[in-house]
Image (cartoon, rainbow, N blue to C red):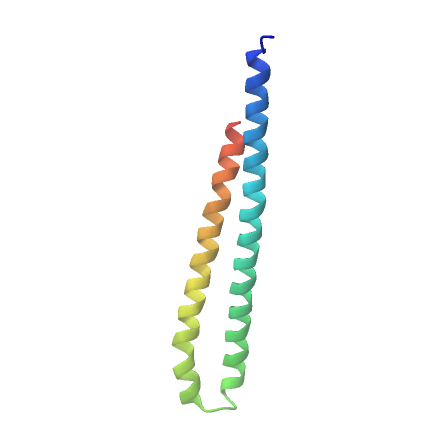
Length: 95
């Protein structure tokens, strides 16, 4: 029995869209988690800055560069995950 090539193509495209949708869902979840970690780091930094006046300023000055480095890494992670989200979106849109 011969298969209709258009039906085969339609099925393949649907599978590709389903796969891209699943990839997008995973990428969005990773992006949300990266953003949550970034927000938590920013909150911790604000809290430490607010409390720094009542503690040793030298300890705060020592801690701050490390906190900024961690925050920069977390922001880079968010950007990377955002980029990962755009790949499946583009693939899905091309279908």
